[in-house]
Every structure is written in structure tokens, then in C-alpha cells.
Length: 139
Length: 367
Image 1 (cartoon, each protein chain N blue to C red):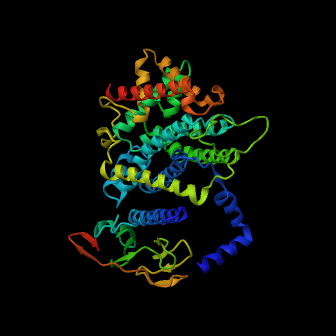
Image 2: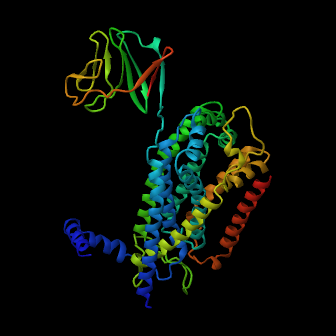
Image 3: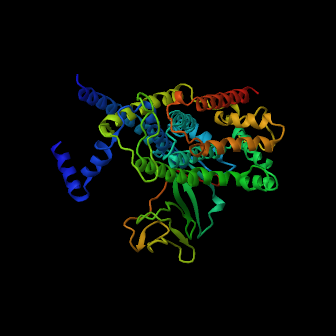
């Protein structure tokens, strides 16, 4: 084998090793960067019933996102995702108007999460909850 | 292949890449007697790249706050998938960088490559060496372990020996009277921003000087091993009839890089805690100083020198003189001969200095 042949062989071997090594390190780096499942997420959230007064809303973290409990005038409870369905901003509760407003682009929702004005394409997602012994369990 | 050629053609007619490749790669000729020691610079570039990459990855989970730093490092090691691998690569890599840098410097010393007209190459390399020491020292504090905390306390306290300004200098370095949260803040900024940027700039300057002066010819295997530089006017040291950088020497570089990676990964996978004393696994406690706190292996000689001299100022001054002598070596050693065996005074001093450094390090380790 002449010099150039040997050099080419060495180049292919080293290049192949470099590619193999890069691939072997890409997986750990991907796993290192990938979001961890359930990181920061809480499966169930328990909130004392007395913390949600009539006509008011209580915001809290749920399943790695933001959620809200509303006690409507009349006492009915609603649990909703607080993430606006337009571009993902967090909605705010307007106590005087008894509705939600998204501060980003002015989307409006009823206390049940139904869109009344603005660009949101869908209502706010409803969350399952139960009430027992003076505690509201969401999730 | 046809598609690749068309793509290169497309780029070439716009920015003339073939001309650049011809000038910088295939037409860039190196001496035929070039040896493996010339590839240490490339290995160091790869190490610097790995350090930057693993450092950026660590920044994603590391919290530079005294209350959370240790917890975040523990979480990287135990909770984050492959976090241990990224951190071990960074920690082991920092030690390996110092080791390869020392080999690079020794080879330049022994082959007389620091001599005129390469004063700039040597000086920029020497400043890079001190910056590597600086980035290692500042990075040492970041895990906020007992080892980090007390090693930094001892290291910063050395400045106390400087007359008049010493105590203020120590406080300035720490950002407070004792090592504490302000120290972590400033060491973090130095470690992740200021020193790496400075190093990148100096690496650029180092390579620029190398390109402008040309690669030196090894003094071995030739009848006349004296410095051929005449002085007086700028002269690029070319090597007509030499070997092209690409593919010939690039492959030699790559071979050295792989030998390095084999050693590096052997430590990472088989002895990852080689450079970790047990105090590195305990969170910093400002009220409890562990016994026998020691710096990293490459600072052991400095540590022992400070212990030998009864006066700290003398110990510091001796080190300052030694470092200044080394930095100014190309201006002190004006001899034309480059072959180490034909420079007996140099050889005695270099080997003596190396043995002294090794002896002090071993003494420091066991003292």
C-alpha cells in the first residue's frame, strides 16, 4: 500500500471514529437537555374551600402550568387552565366585571372559560376537581 | 459527490473558498521533520472547545447562588440525565487542559521554539497559561463545597502578604472580608464570561502570530540546528518541499486528539473522582475548616513554596520572580542554538526546574 493509500485509510478510520464519538455524545447531550417528564408538575392540588370566596378567583400551579379556581356569584365552583388559548399568556380575573381578560391581546372569557371577545380560538380548558371536607382537590 | 462538487462550485464562485483552502490547508507547508509535539496546540484547541461546550451545558442547571450552588451541582450529578457525564468531562477536562498545556510549553522550551522572532507567540502562550490557572481557580469555587470554599480562602489569602495593599486586595478579590456569596458572584462572572472571552481572544492572537511567523523547524535531525532568523526585517519562515497541513499533518493532529480523548475518557469513565478529594462532596461550611486542605495538583508547588519560606512575602516574591523569568525567557535566552543537547546550561536549568517543580508538588501533596 502506498503512502496516499495508508493516509486515506487512516483518514477514513479517524473520521469514522470522530463520527461515532460525536453520535455517542449526541444522545447524552439530548437527554441532558430534554425536558424531564413531570418535572415540577404536581399530580393533584388541594386548596382549602375557604380560600376561594364568592366572586373571586384563586390562581395556582397545576401540572407544570397555571390554573385558576373561580367561585361564581351564586357559589358554583369552576376549575380552569389559566393559559389563554390564543398565544399562551396567563389570563387575569376582573372581579368587578366577573370575567377573565388576557393582558396580551385583549381576549375575554366568562367565568366558565367561554370566549366572549378578542382573538382566542377556543375556550379555556376545564380541569376536573372534587370538593370534600372543606377542601377542593384539583386533578 | 456530484452534488457536493456543485455546492462547493456554487460557494467558490462567490467567495473563492478553493483559494483559501489551497493557501491555508493543502498549500500550507510544514517542515518534513515535524513531530508529534507540534500537535499539542491542536489538542489544546479541542480541549478548550470541550470545556466551553460542557461549561455552557452546565450553566443550564447550575445556580450561582451560595444557598443553591452545591444543591444544583448535586442535582446535576444525581438527577439530570447524563449530568454526571457533562460535569465529569468539565472537571476532568480542566485538569487535562493544564497537563497538556504544560506538555506544550515544555516541548516549545526544549525545541527552542520560543526564540526570536517568536517572542509574541511565547508571551501570548504564557498569558494563556496564567489565564488557564485563573479559570481553574475561579471554577474551583463554583460547586460551593468544603474544598471549594476553603481552597479559595487559602488562595485569596495569599495576597495578604503584599505590603500595604495586601489586606485590601484580599477583600477586593473576595468582595467581602471573608469568602462568601459576593465571592461566588465575582468568581462566577470571571469563570464563565471574562476569562473565557479573554482566552478566546488570546488564542486568536496566538494563532495569528503563528501564521505570520510561520511554524518553526524542529531542531532535531539536521546538521545545523541554529536559529536562522536574521532580524532587521519581517521574514516568514516557509518550508519549501515540506508536507501539506491538509491532509498530512491534519491527520497527525487528529491522531493526537484521539490519543488524548482515549486517556481523557478513560479517566472520566474509570476513575472520575481522581481529582476529587473527599471534601469536594461536602457542602461549604464557613464555620468548619477541614483538616489538610490542599489546592489542585498544579498549584501544589506554589502551595509548598509558600510553606517553606518563613515569610509569606518572600514565598510570593520567589514565585513572582520565577514566573517573570519564564515569561521573559525569549528576551533573556538570546543564544542561536536550538537543539537541547547543544544547550547544556539550558538543559541543566530546564531539567533542574522541572525536577524542583515536581519535587515541590510531591512534597506539597504529602506535607
